[in-house]
Image (cartoon, rainbow, N blue to C red; front, top):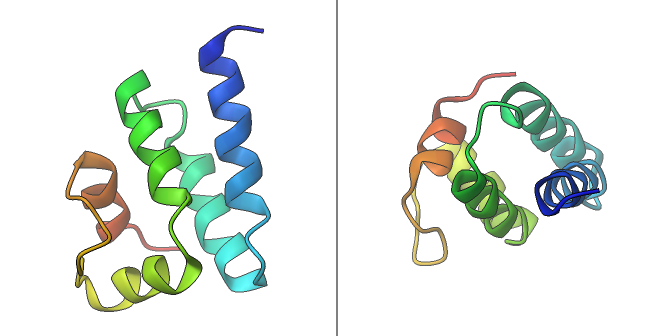
Length: 84
């Protein structure tokens, strides 16, 4: 298995096992939809984004306020427009 496939598996796992069912659903659907379209650098950005706390990600999803923990990048921009 190459590094890219390993990273994708880590992302899928992290999106599916968050701690709350709501975040599991939201993030796993986002990842399922976009994981095969992101470049390697975007996948790394996604992995870093998924390592943020659920509360930070959920607040961004609801309010689009990036606060000081979320770095602006293409992945975050796409997630901000994502609808389940």
